[in-house]
Amino acid sequence: MSLLEDAEVLLLDIEGTIAPVSFVFEVLFPYAAAQVETFLEVHGKEPLVQADLAALRDEYEADTGRGLILPDWSGPEPTAATPYIRFLIAADRKSTGLKSLQGKIWEQGYLSGAYRSQIFADVRPAFERWTRAGKRIYIYSSGSIQAQRLLFEHTEQGDLRGYLSRYFDTTSGPKLEADSYRRIAGQIAVDAAQILFASDHRGELRAAQQAGLRTVLVVRPGNALAEGTDFPVVRSFAPAPAGDES
Ligand SMILES: CSCCC(=O)C(=O)COP(=O)(O)O
Ligand SMILES: [Mg+2]
Image 1 (cartoon, helix red, strand yellow):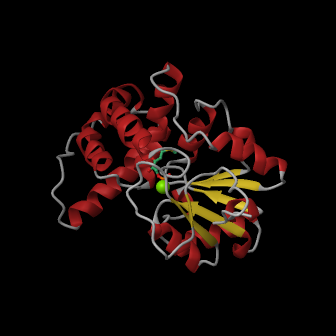
Image 2: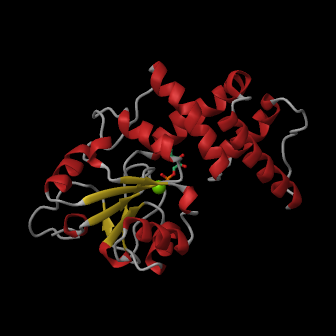
């Protein structure tokens, strides 16, 4: 039986695992970069957006303190944050403030029909099969929980939220830190060793492994990472044919 079929508790990454990297980099990020200024004009004074801007301001001060060359953010109006936010998007920064704001902007894209989420063809069949087999499926992504819910609600394969037990984002900690996985195992209330974490990112897998989770490297079309011998590999969520074990 393959590693994925064998696990009782699955913790899955999104980008490069469930969704092609190209959907995130060619659809979601450009949409957020294009819409952020208008979004801040309309919603910038709302408390939840103000909270994101306050987190981003702290990040800006920290970046300034580290001597990074940054776009100017000097005006008091919410839209003054636009150049810095675009800078963070271009840098693929995984900070909680940015991801929270991106989730709010992406909601408009889904609701207006600008896009639906692209996911690999084997995802829904796997979720159906794993659910029938009594497995629990959890998500851990740098995208905010709101962004994750939206992504699974609006897929080209329909609304997949019903298959998912819970979502985790960077409010549980960064994906590159072992403590984040310990925290998640505690919240799921199982031994870390019962969880199989599947991701396209070796740094994330190393952190999860340090926390005692089982790990599998997901190699999908468009992913940057090559296979190696450090982690077991899956290329698909389809069940392995008999005699072709991972
Ligand atoms: C929830 S979809 C947006 C994904 C995203 O913003 C991102 O940074 C991808 O991170 P992941 O941890 O899913 O690789
Ligand atoms: Mg990923």
